[in-house]
Length: 333
Image (cartoon, rainbow, N blue to C red; front, side, top):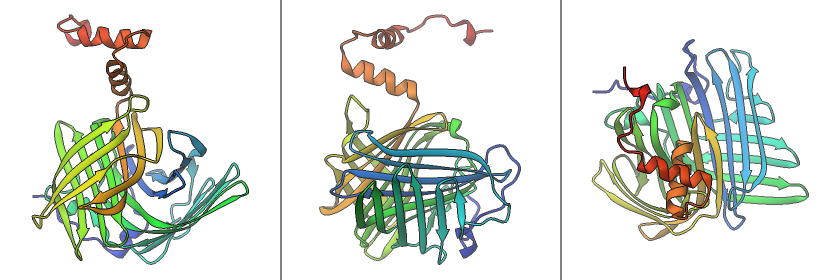
């Protein structure tokens, strides 16, 4: 049985990390702006040596960058907390615990002011039957909410009043343990919210997360996945998820297209973050699908799916596909 973890208000703030090289605490805020074909990722982290980093992405329909920044190795005081946290161009202010937060950044003529108000209780992956896997975090909380604010792109100002998602994890993070994953966030206004992490790591399959609907939040038991993707980006063009939770409820999520996509490196994997409209049991909502793949897998799949084999890369992929039973000295002693 997994160790029982009781979430407290203090867990909305910064934790004390050990000196393990894999120690890491991170915050991420996700936002897609309907009708504008714009997605936003605001991500910040700190390690056991109190060295911090931040990444901001504002992107368009097909991996088009409106702006992007990345800083790391920034020394921050050990008593700096998430109620007033600044790393590079980004500032995060956690307000009422597990309820409100604000994230801002300004970079290269793009300015974000994003206020988050939770619509669900904070859920930790230790609330799932087998707990939070040790390669992912000591603990990790997920939360759906409402997102309001403004995005300025040069002289253009875009006001938004929509839904969003955030997470907060702390402890060990071992990206090399992951074979493949998808992290999915769904909201129907403030009435329905879903988060799940589905994938494989260290020879195990994981279904983690929650369904929050009809006034009750329930841990996920199983997720069925059916995704179609494009050849150019290997990212979703349509998706269907059927989710079973511990209250024995079945929830169907269907998306028929995406309206924003970013592809970026994450811990040796290639992260594909895309969002767009969806339906949840027929109700209109918004979906964010993040998938993590090994880059060589993506390139090989794109080459094989093209079926042309008219480039050096595609011919190499075809050769690998045919290379069954070839002796490899590195695998023998």
